[in-house]
Image (tube, rainbow, N blue to C red; front, top):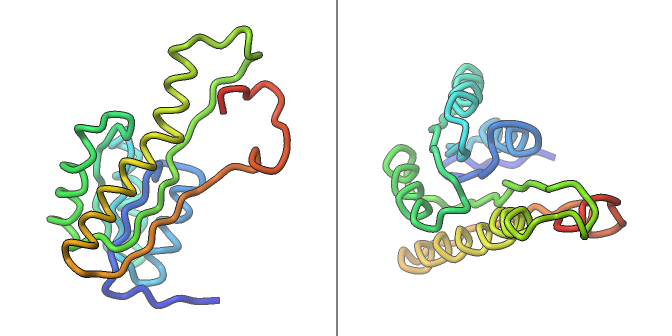
Length: 157
């Protein structure tokens, strides 16, 4: 199945590797301009070069999604480079491995900040912008197979 996303701009978190990188490439191949968001700028630049060499448009946007103060400025940079965002892919995620009795409060907080709080904050900021501009958009939240089965050793996840 192919989609024509020409004229659309997507913001993909966790775009440095894995599924985020894959989602970004598929969106670009379907015509969307893609803001590649993540902490590792060197990896974002590599993905950007790949997308551009295939004829797509992309921008590398450095962001730590756990820092709420970085969200609006990162979206501003993406929009300045590529145009208004109308697709958000909340993909960034992490886990801390260990038994519940062994996981520190800081590690638990890190997982919750990345996997739960950040997607909420990103989604609400993108939604505010879409509503203000009277534009339709899509917000896609990536979940884990852990939603359907037990993943031993990933208590905080």
